[in-house]
Image (tube, rainbow, N blue to C red; front, top):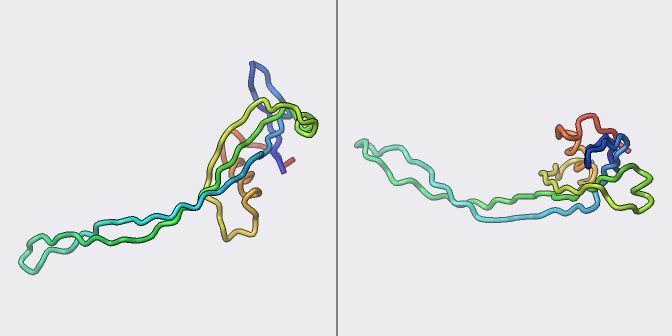
Length: 119
């Protein structure tokens, strides 16, 4: 899996740039969240103290490293990447697509990858 799309760097345009996810990790972060819920005034119209409610939150975030090569041959030839970037997104854990496929789909939603083609 990868994407192809032109890429500019060093004052040059790499028309056949090959964008490959090299490292994909996800983070599960669970924590307690306390919120104050405003209450209606009492029968005399006096303010009532808010009630604290505590809930457990769970954030599931995927982080990945994207390496960009001059072209596909540079990647398969184990040449050095011309660029490396970090991204993160929230995967759909119920999707039939795996997280790697979702990461490439996410990239295609970004302006920088508008028009990118699956490689």
